[in-house]
Image (cartoon, rainbow, N blue to C red; front, side, top):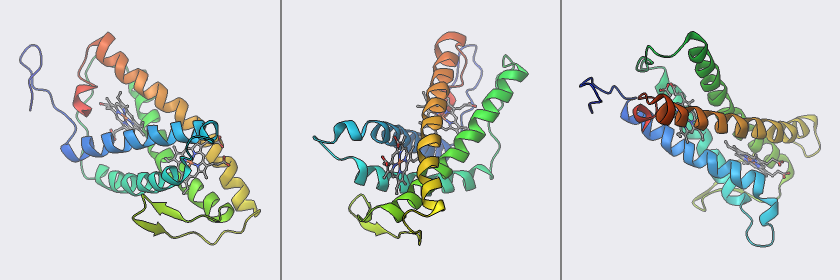
Length: 180
Ligand code: HEM
Ligand code: HEM
C-alpha cells in the first residue's frame, strides 16, 4: 500500500481489478478507434479481423471482470465528492459495464449473419458463429445497435477519461492513482 501526502494510506482497487481495467481499457480504445476509423484506412490496412477478435476477447474479459466485481467492495470515494458526483460516477460505470458486454455481442451477431469471413481470435483459433440469417430483423438490429451503441460508448469513454484526469490534475485527489 503506497502512502499519500499527509501520511494517509492510499487504498487502491485490488490487483486483479486494476489489471483487468487496464487490459480492457486498452482494447476498448483500440476497438473504438479501429471501428470508427477502419473504413478510412481501407487502402492501407483492414483492421476488422483484429477488431473482431479483440472484441470477443473484450467480451470474455468483461464477463470475468464482472464476476470478480461481485466478490469485493470498492475502496470508499473521497469525502470531497458530492452526492451528485457519486451518482454520476455510478451511472457512468454501470453504463460502461453494460456496453462492454452489449457492444461486442451485437458485433458477434452482426458478423455471424453478414460476413463470409471467420471470426479469428488473433490468428490462434476460430470463434464460433451464431445461427443468424443475413437480412433478418435480428441481424439488422444488431448492425444498427453496434453502430449507435459503439458511438455512445466512445462518448462515454471520453467523458470517463476526462473525469479521471480532472480528479488527478484539477481536484488533485487519489481517484486516478487507485485504479493504476
Ligand atoms: C467492445 C468491443 C467493440 C467495440 C467498442 C466496437 C466498436 C465499433 C465501432 C464504433 C464501429 C463503427 C460503427 C460504424 O461506423 O458502423 C464498429 C464496426 C464494426 N464492428 Fe465493432 N466493436 C466491438 C466489438 C466487435 C465484435 C466482437 C465484432 C465481431 C465479432 C465487431 C465487428 C464489427 C464490424 C464487422 C464492423 C463494421 C461494420 C460496418 O461498417 O458495417 N465489433 N465497431
Ligand atoms: C476505455 C475503456 C474504459 C472502460 C470500459 C472503463 C470502465 C471502467 C469501469 C466500469 C469502472 C468502474 C470500476 C468499478 O468500481 O467497478 C472504471 C473505473 C475507473 N476508470 Fe475506467 N474505463 C476505461 C478507461 C479508462 C481510462 C483510459 C482511464 C484513465 C485515464 C480510466 C480511469 C478510471 C478510474 C480512475 C477509475 C476508478 C474510479 C473510482 O475510483 O471510482 N478508465 N472504469
